[in-house]
Image (tube, rainbow, N blue to C red; front, side, top):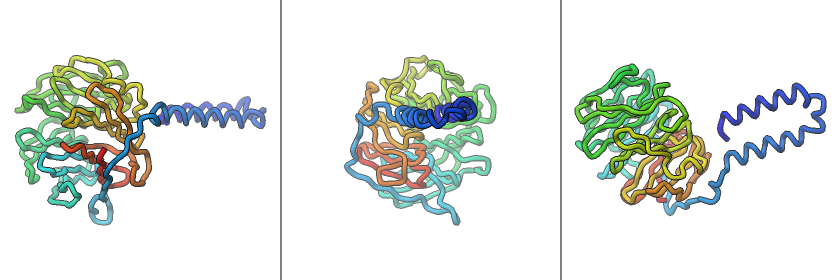
Length: 328
């Protein structure tokens, strides 16, 4: 159930109990409880039970500890060389092989204020990290050496409030999503020159409330609009094209990230539903896998995902402090 729906129901229930319900509660209370229960149940179900996927392979591993704590992963990115790059909420960048063996790791330049949320391997071999709470994009080589930074705090061109996701096109332009009541997408050249921007904070078509994931393909940008529970798509110059397929009708619950497979399918991880949803290239829902929890087929507040050429999906299972791998 959406948190806002829950809050409205709670306020209504309290008013009922302090007014009419206080005098006639013994008559109406069973009916009220049934209505609240059905509202919560039906608002969270939709038609998802008709679109269940199965996994032919499941694997997972816990994040390596840092001192006495086990940090939680936030972002994952698989490379063509089958190296899995992971960002965690301790401020580390960790590199695993596809089986979960750690190969190397390093720290973000700063991390006391907040931790980064997305990582992307660029065409020239650099790694770009959305260093969210430091209002910038940081570039590394694959061994962890800082080779560049863009951005500073602000709402102007080339400035950021909370940069959260990145994508690159076939001309090496970089697109950066940000949130913080300045929700938009900015486009930069390969050298970092500002080119254009689109979007604003809100619920109308073309607006965003936490655009937390982005994919570029064939001159189009697909943007996860997390708090509006939808995927919107645009030309790569920022012209609004619409809601991606039927994503607005399938009950997405805080979608936080999306990726596109080589086969052309889109995978979306849902923070609120603890699952991965799969769409074809036209936007038709193919199915869901997973649910909220800590079991084998479950996720807890997942933040990010990635997919390789064999359609193996890795998920940053944030609440369970582990990486989950599924073959869907």
